[in-house]
Length: 352
Ligand SMILES: Nc1ncnc2c1ncn2[C@@H]1O[C@H](COP(=O)(O)OP(=O)(O)OP(=O)(O)O)[C@@H](O)[C@H]1O
Ligand SMILES: [Mg+2]
Image 1: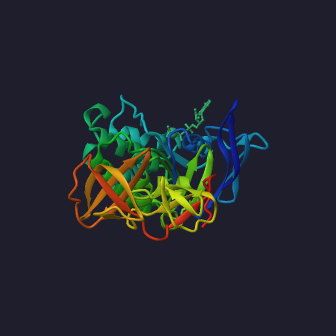
Image 2 (image 1 turned 45 degrees about the vertical axis):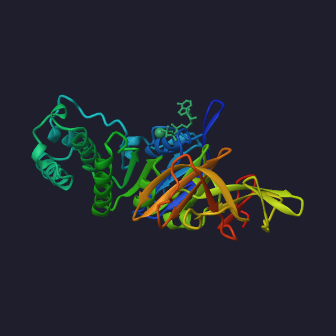
Image 3 (image 1 turned 120 degrees about the vertical axis):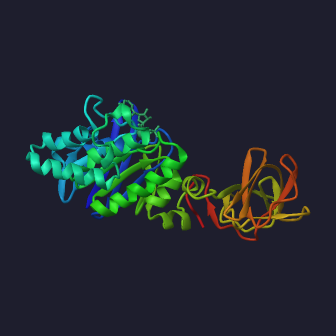
């Protein structure tokens, strides 16, 4: 079990991690998901023991390994965790075999046992035929596999990944995603995986912590985040496509929804109505519940069509059965269903 308790990290004025508390069971695949600068790498570096928290604790299997309140932490090498970075520096003067063997040598594992283990992980990552090549003689994707093989060789009980696939092309990313999940099942190691890619997060994670500005916005399973987003940030960051969020303001006896007068019963005079892309439809004619928008994008998505419209900074996406007859740049009418799929307050919190 991995437990993060009230963890805070300050760099001078910057609060990179703010009062984060998360715990996951043994063998979990925890994804830290969030935009650039939200504190993912800092949190991962604290888990690895490379950074001391300002406050709070990290507990691996019941043992405290970092304690900010006591300014104390277990040495990175002694916490049985393995870290894979986005830029994976392999030793250029060592063969693939040599690179993977290195951490085992450092552990003082006997030679015969080392050879056995190196063979095992190279096979697991499908790179055994490359054992005698040097890093400059293999592709970027293969180098990434070597970096992962090197990290798992000592059998760490916690595996930490910082955007390990971001240097790979789109096809390789998808392949490596599957490989990493297979690896996770094979090793059973509790994994913490940092990414800003929500599709990666949703496909790989058993648990996701969505972060923004150092704090955790929501912690749950991928299904929780999609089904019950607790903040407007989560609702618009997670999902393919993300949910639509339309400002609603009281106006006389009714409400202005995205600039148009509509009869709705919102829980507050000023708030946001959330509509899932699947809930929206397109209408041929303007009506009481339609919003005219400029069509800016259409794309095919699993046999259906995703249509995006833009007006006055408001961006709406609908998933519809048939491609619209209108062309890019034309005005199209988005029809809102009678009830939104959720309400959010001005502070971004869910209110209904
Ligand atoms: N050593 C440091 N000194 C000062 N500020 C730092 C330091 N490391 C990180 N920060 C700041 O802390 C915040 C979080 O940084 P962090 O690298 O954890 O973000 P991230 O979520 O990993 O972003 P990205 O997706 O771009 O990698 C940022 O505002 C960053 O500028
Ligand atoms: Mg980072």
